[in-house]
Amino acid sequence: MAVKGIERADVEKLIEPQVANEIFEGTIRDSKLLPLMTKLPNMTSDKTKLRILDTLPIVSFVDETNKNGRKSVTKMAWKDKYINAAELAVIVPIKENLLNDASVDIWAQVRPRITEAFASKIDNAILNGTNKPTDWEQGIAQQIETANAYAEETDNFYKDIDGAMTKVETSGYNVTGILGGLELKSKFRNMLDNTGQPIQNTEIGALPRNYVDNGAWDKKNLDLILGDFKQAVYSIRQDVTFKVLDQAVIQDPDTDAIVYNLAQDDMVALRVTMRLGWALPNPVNIENTTETRFPFASVKKKVD
Image 1 (cartoon, rainbow, N blue to C red):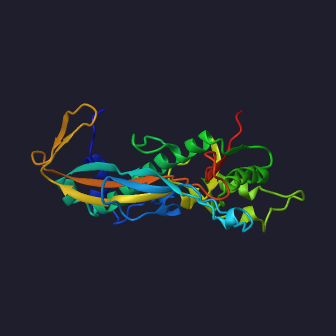
Image 2: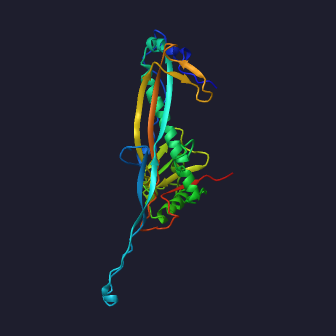
Image 3: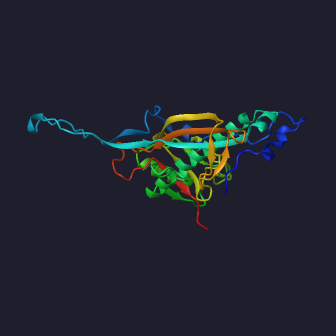
């Protein structure tokens, strides 16, 4: 299907002489995942190497009666893991006359929506691996499945959460929060004790809850994901950058056909780009030195 920019029909309501200078639209949804993760210093190249602790030191008491009190010798080891920067980009073309005729700043309305779309794309790639760049690792939900770090949904939601938390804790991590879709709110409101009263003042009840409302939550398969969110790290190579083009040729990304010639068609286009990468280092810790450790777990929905 041919790529289309903003056309007159799309902004007709902004050109009417009596139109109010406000556009009524939904709330802009930013990333729900990145604020929970650890932000590393900005990348200085397209690839950043992480040094991840892979082997812990072994310490022993000195026995003065054995081998003249000889001290033990140990080693520590690190392995490498990489954060690969991937680019998000979009171009929004529009007729110059439409920009001039509109009674509001169209670019001011477009920019936050593009940022929202970027946030949803990033969260979806990191959480679910959906349309992820080829050199990014699998999404957190997919890695949870591989690590067998999940609890099956039952009729006792409180125990389901406890089961998922236990998976994280036996891996040597502390749960710092819970992530889910908006429908998770109802499950918490209906988490009742044997007398029908809300379960309150518990460790589970005290955990921060974060709700994904930007279209990136897999509501079909998961009730929630929980874990030590600071173990997931990300780095920015290039922050969101806006540039107005007026001399470019716009091609259909699928067919390579020329859709717009900005100079010839009296058009301009807003190009928006961003580059970032993420990783889940999963370093060895003193509670669990095995390869089965994992800092996240989920509660999976029942299969009907």
